[in-house]
Length: 180
Image 1 (cartoon, one colour):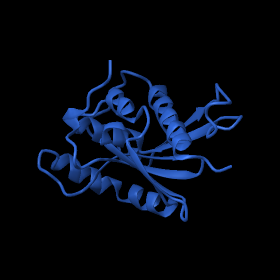
Image 2: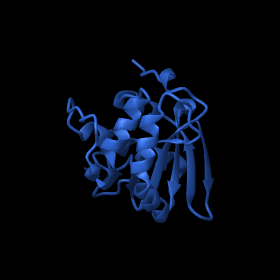
Image 3: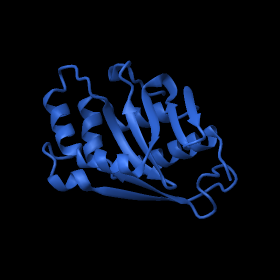
């Protein structure tokens, strides 16, 4: 069954929100990451509580797989993006999207255009994970200087689709406001 962009977005954002809120609150990350964190994987089993609304989850639910979640959390924190602001920016209908059916690629801009969510190949995901340690080092050393590199804020897999979440380079993360 082919899903609409709206169904994909709703499923993706719901899974992302549930995944981030599943993580223990208040646990501070050490300042220097352990090398194993760059290869860490966190799985979230997401149950389908309302079978008729989230067709992406199916009757049994779905698993969201986050790659290097603590590393991306550090990157978001370094750029002033809290988990609450991150989740809030992803909620609601997307601002704009591009859906290329031929390759099943999707590019979606979050509400407010702060983040870009795009589907990527499994090989691209593996390459990004393999280069994550020097990428992270570069961002942390030069975070006060403008960089030409995009700021990745997450990589995850949902229903065999790999997603890369990137901060939109045209927006300042300090403008992210959580909606009361």
